[in-house]
Length: 534
Ligand SMILES: NC(=O)c1ccc[n+]([C@@H]2O[C@H](COP(=O)([O-])OP(=O)(O)OC[C@H]3O[C@@H](n4cnc5c(N)ncnc54)[C@H](O)[C@@H]3O)[C@@H](O)[C@H]2O)c1
Ligand SMILES: O=C(O)[C@H](O)COP(=O)(O)O
Image (cartoon, rainbow, N blue to C red):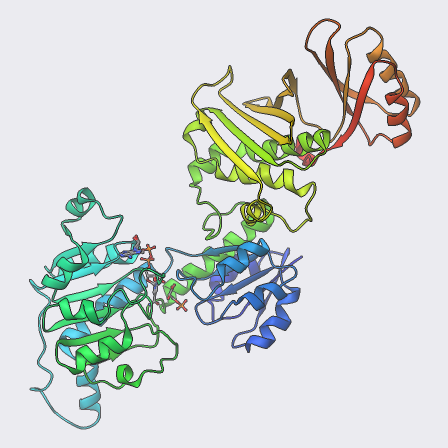
């Protein structure tokens, strides 16, 4: 039973995937004080939040069982991602569920700003009838600068085109071609400053975007410009905005998000030219249901099948690529486990070569899986595919990945080499559709071996009688041999024998086997093989 805690207000309907699954127990505890969350989190496997709960390093460090932090929304700036990664906790979000809600809120804010709707409403409900004071401006044929042309920026641009605005888009990833297809103009930030009547920001809050619109930038904007921030507080410097509005350079602003929430700067919240909403961009019934549904289904997937779709701290892998690399996920891990058990020394250097069609694919997850399996042999169980690269770095271990379109006789082929000082070992695998995974070489010996749970890896000199001797000693210990693979460098030269056996080989039997003349080493290997593969 996995325990999930929800600490912000989330749609109950959207949580259906978790609430209806008997493998999960869901507790809802909104408005917890930081100390209470630190105390409570110890018992939970997954945490679901929106933007209110601060998932700090202290919270993450206290979370002994936590595997997943799920953000039912987009921005993850309330979650300490580095701390989560170090602890091996996957952070996921629901990137698309509230796009339309935030887009429509931006349009509502832009129209309200242009037509003074909140101010006029306040005036009328206070008993005044003032038609002159609230004369507005039209959006028609005005220029809108969109800073950040991601999901929301793109949808805002589409809708603003419906109002026949001229759109200037700025985003490091916006190409001329995409801009042209959308009927907008790709522009620089300075071009937006010089030309825009309205500027709306839709970037995440990062070190680069914090204060992107600051006093210097505002000084470059057109007099009478109007600004909208439905993205993150801090992208527009709050005090610089207040000053520019008070000076009359900026005609007005519409702000949904604040550096501190609730906001502390009254110059912003009590300014007749600045309209504000309390972070409502994602607050529609539809968006809340979609984001809750997205994270709930993903949490079930992570715990039940290991599939991750929207991880923040794992390489992003599309569903198509996931499908292509899927057969290699377990196989590559088993191959690394096997190699470590016959190599024994801690690897100082790790080399991974991908051959064939895998050359074209994003193999980051396979690389992580193999390195995790290698390092788990010596490091404690807290290492996983989320924190493996940090662990590697922390231990100053070197790794390299090479890709080669040559297929070495197989459609795909993965080779793993580890080294400790001068000692080296290699192993390789492939996947044969219809037959399954195969280990196809170990230390240069060619094989065609299906990975099985228990193996004996024997190195010996190629002389007659060794196979028979090993077989009878195992028989004496009641150990059944499932299959046998042999390889030799030359007749009478160095050779290996791999036996798959039905149960663990006791140390006494191993020692007896070691005493066979011309037999150099024997290693009992146990690898993790799922039931359905056996
Ligand atoms: N007010 C709300 O309730 C609400 C709701 C949803 C999302 N948001 C916020 O809106 C923002 C955008 O969300 P999204 O889903 O469109 O994200 P997104 O990731 O789809 O788009 C962000 C875009 O910003 C661009 N970008 C990054 N750095 C930039 C820079 N320095 N200059 C220009 N562009 C830059 C990226 O290239 C990307 O295209 C996020 O901050 C998100 O947290 C707020
Ligand atoms: O980043 C987001 O998804 C929005 O800011 C929404 O935040 P919320 O879930 O707290 O409304």
